[in-house]
Each structure stands twice: as structure tokens, then as C-alpha cells.
Amino acid sequence: MTTSCRVCKGPVREFLDLGRQPLSDAFPVPGRTEEEFFFQLAVGRCEECTMVQLLEEVPRERMFREDYPYHSSGSSVMRAHFEETARRLLATELSGDDPFVVEIGCNDGVMLATVSEAGVRHLGVDPSGGVGEVARDKGVRVRTAFFEESTALDIAAGEGPADVVYAANTICHIPYLESVFRGLDALLKPTGVFVFEDPYLGDIVRRTSYDQIYDEHFYLFTARSVRAMARGFGYELVDVERLPVHGGEVRYTIARRGARTPSPAVAELLAEEERTRLADLDTLRGFASAVRRNRDDLLALLRRLRDEGRRVVAYGATAKSATVANYCGIGPELVSFVCDTTPAKQGRLTPGSHIPVRGPEAFRDPYPDYALLFAWNHAEEIMAKEEGFRAAGGRWILYVPDVRLV
Ligand code: SAM
Ligand code: TMP
Ligand code: ZN
Image 1 (cartoon, rainbow, N blue to C red):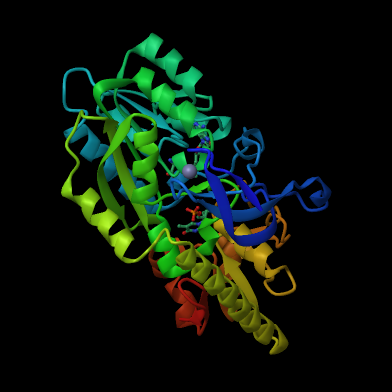
Image 2: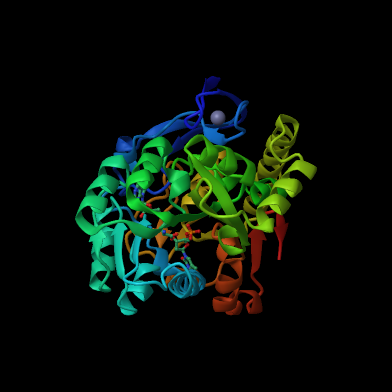
């Protein structure tokens, strides 16, 4: 299948098809699975600007709704990460006279709560009403809307220009980036910066973490594709920073062209991508082969454990795991339930694969023989919290970067 690049309109060549997939964050009520929405999850690379992107776009209102269940503050590691992010912004870009920061996709206020406590002018923009309410309870100002050109114009008119527009795990969700950049034209001060962090294609390929590909992750960025995108819209990539969170991300800083001198880190990451041929179609096809091997290995292990009569449950009903469960064909016959701390997911079924979701207490009652760690990006935090599981003889099943027991 070929489509046109959502950024530069060049041809996009498919390199991986992960099959029919449900909305990754829509957990059906038992007995009401006939209402589920499915789409074809295939990924391609633009032959002009190298942007890696999905071939089919899921309507945004289906994904980001009043009851969007993902709450960023559910992980202590992520809470610490965003507090540190806020402190750094406050000490640098937001240290001038009456600074103003806009966050796209503020979710439950995990980052802006610290900015609000510091008394700094801020506005979160997020279309998912439920998480926005939680943010407001923390003293964060939130506008329930999709960020796009019209929203940005409105904010600029009402509150003046912004020193920083920040986003985490959100810009890769937005196919219509042209509208976002036109919004930045109106909203950012001449010397302001657009800072965003998202899963990094370099880490995804290196670790075969194909579960980073799902409906919400429309783009998988690299320094090269982000630089091309920024230039296409009249901006410049001026800094990059690798982050360990969510299995490997990059934080990109973008400024108006000519406003700032790019840091050496930009050239270094571009050189590394060139050396590893990250954007080459051959590399991406090699990644697709590794994905198929990973699926075969995981299925073989789960089937063996089932045939041996072992009790296997999963840990973390992550959005990422929708891709794994539906691509591999993992259902309740292989994994009896998934435990998750998110109240809105409990008592529901996993999207498409229909594995029951229970609270974390079900994990210990009694411990299973094996636990498939769907939330592998929170491995350290979860394994520390659940050390009793291994002490009782349980083993974790991991599949990133390869299938193994620990
Ligand atoms: N920033 C948080 C974090 O990193 O944990 C939340 C990330 S969450 C995966 C993505 C958030 O982006 C959701 O809360 C969703 O409602 C929001 N979102 C999606 N499209 C958006 C848009 N066009 N403008 C603003 N927010 C958007
Ligand atoms: P994420 O990988 O997108 O951050 O989603 C993590 C999911 O895992 C989310 O549904 C919450 C759940 N979770 C737990 O159940 N227990 C935990 O200790 C952590 C950190 C996450
Ligand atoms: Zn392109």
C-alpha cells in the first residue's frame, strides 16, 4: 500500500503490516465487544523526508474522548520525570519576566502541576475531558480542545505569546502537524521554543519494540525526519536529548529559523542515524523481520506454558500491548487476565484480544507461575514493587528486545 506523506506529501512506502487492530485505549465492557472499532495498522516511510508514519489515520475523536483512560501520573517514575522537566523549564526558558507556557496534551497535569505551584502562567490543552478535570483539581489551567491552528490563534489572542510550547507523548499522535506549526507561528514568541518528546525510532528498531506502533502513535520520529519537518515549516531543530523513559525517547527543541544556534547534539544524533542507516528501507525491512521472529518466539513460549498447564497472567494493560496481543493472537486462552492499576480499565476487557482486566491485588491472589510484562517500559518500578512474585518462584516473561524469562 502507498499513501502520501502527511508532512511533505511525498510517497510513503509500507515496510510493516501489523494487521487489523482495535483502538489501543478503548477497553470494552464484557458482552459489548461488537461495538469495537478496528483499522489496518501498517507503517511506511516517506521517500522524500524519511518520516515514518501509519498508513491509515484513525479519527481523532474516537481515540481522545471524555473517558480516555490513560493517566500519566500512574507511574512514580513518570511523575519524577515530569517534575524534573518542569523544574528545568522554570530555570531556563521560563525564568524571564512574566513567562507563559502552553502544554499540548497535558493529560492529568503531571507536568504543569509543578509550573502552577511555582505561580507561573500556563495553559494545558487536551481534548480528553476526564483527564483534564483531574488536572484542574491540581490547580492546573486546562482548555478541553485539540491543539491546532484555530486553538493556537485563540490562545495567542487571549493570553499573548508563549515562551515555550511543550508536549510529551502527544506530537506523535497528531497527523495534522501543518496546522500545529501554523498555530506555533501565531503563538510562539520570536525567540520562543517548541519542545516535544516522543518514542524514538532508533530505540524502537534497536530493541524491536514494535509495540510502540499503535493507533495513537501516528509518527515514529528521528532527528532527520524532525529536522526536515521543522525546515519545511520555516523552523529549525536546535537541540536533541535522549531520554530513558518509555523505552527510549528523544526530546526535540525547535525554534524559528535563525533564532538559535543548533547545539552539537543535533549533528551528533544525525551522524549516528546516518552511520546506523536508521532511515534506510533495508534497515526498516530488517526490523520487520525481527518483529515477525519476536511474535513467533512469544507465541511458541506461551503455547508451551499452556500445554504444560502453567498459570500465566499479564501485567499492565498498556496501549502498547494491544498491538502485541492482536498481532500475535494472544487471548484469554493463553493469558488468564491482565492486572492494571487504572480503575477505568478494571472490570473491562483488553481491546480486540478480550482478556479480562483486574486490579493489581489479583496478581497476588495467588501469584501465577508466569507474568507477561506488557508494561515492560516500567519494568524496574514494577519488579521492585512486586519482588514477592519472584521470591515465590514466579518468572517474568519479557519480549523486548527478545523473548526471555527473568
Ligand atoms: N503528556 C502526557 C504524558 O506524556 O504522559 C500525556 C500523554 S497521552 C499518551 C496523550 C495525550 O494527548 C492525551 O491526554 C490526549 O488526550 C492528548 N491529545 C491528543 N491529541 C491532541 C491534540 N491535538 N491536542 C492536544 N492534546 C492532544
Ligand atoms: P504506559 O506504558 O503507556 O505508561 O502504560 C502503563 C500501564 O501500566 C497503565 O495502564 C498503568 C499500568 N501500570 C500498572 O498497572 N502498575 C504499575 O506499577 C505501573 C507503573 C503501570
Ligand atoms: Zn515526507
